[in-house]
Image (cartoon, rainbow over all chains, first blue to last red; front, side, top):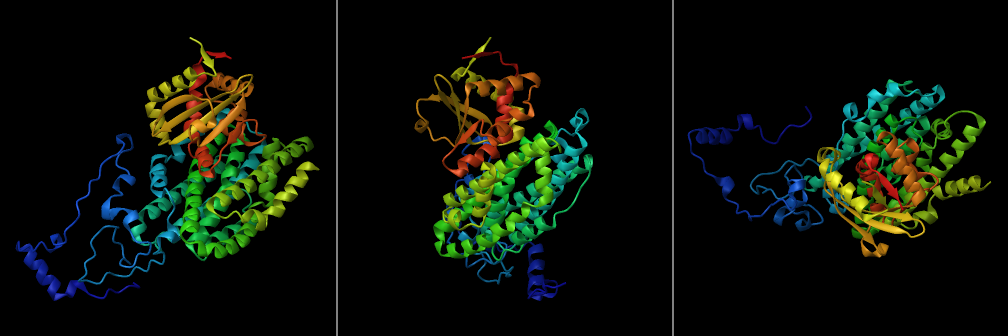
Length: 374
Length: 145
């Protein structure tokens, strides 16, 4: 036990006397003293049910909440009454400023996430695996890819889980959304593990890739972790998923990637909107975010590790013969260029157009263009 | 009865079927986007399909892309749309090279045109719904323009 309360209620005589009194029927209804503003919560669109946005009313609305939360350090939900006569325990949230965590439209992403959940065991047509005969070289390459993706998805599960309890409980929408992200990412790790084990098994874990992933987990602030994970990392992985759907050996793997792609794109959207909110409301952090991204982008090249690259080339060319490898190199080169270009475009829209000029990825992009033209 | 492609009736029929297949689309979840479909050919056609919650609630042909705020537009020549729908017709789902994602990814056979990356990402956020939407054409008797 590492936390001992400031009051032992089991031996507190005032408390015990009060409970005894209540049990005799002497209720004082003190908890009804605070007048509450009556709010009207109604379903704007019955097809959606009662949404988070429907509940953004009066004192409960985030727009009526100050930028910095000073009064609450515990678990009070936004809009609850804090008893001035008692001392709330300090649970130590370090993210008490809205721009630390908020993203435009986060309520919608939370609802979308809840609505678009899927089940690895039953929503992937595993029964069709027997219908297709995948050549050994493609199967092994695919399982090598699944191994790396399992590693990636584990860090993407851990990062939101790591930061959630640091967020002030008034930012419930963000905590709720990143909780859906954690379950999404756990589901992705599950689907890649299951697919590998249903086929040729797991192959080589990526040391280089894991160094890149450690950089995400060790970010100094939530915003740094978010811009690395959601915008940079998941943006790259989204394009990788798109490519993986394109080069999937059978419709079973295609279905897998269609489903994981949807979740990943939602996380990218939140990250983009958080970065945008941060740049709009806290522009003074721009040098810090840029400095962090200079290093994060270097880390990210770790995901271009030789094992993953070779397995993608084999899958892209559909084999290991020289002409197939040549074709695979073209396919992979094209999607890597797209990964970098889409990242620059997202950074620009979020308010960091300078990434295109200062990014270490620029050199990588130029090398790819040169290789493609040679 | 044959349905002409491209035509507004083609997309209205897809929207009607989406409503009839409510269970399938409700399982896939909310889908909120305005998608453009551009068919290039001798005379180009541009359609706006509005998806709201579980339905395609509005289909219209546009004279200009500025007529409606589109999240993204899928642009391809008529011949490629034809290949895609014929692939879907074979088994009810497209061959690997003819999914919406594959066609729009490498080689840019089908272009994804967008202004805001948030709009672009909606194509991927709702991919399973949009693919299921076009897969409904598997038993269409299509009359090609």
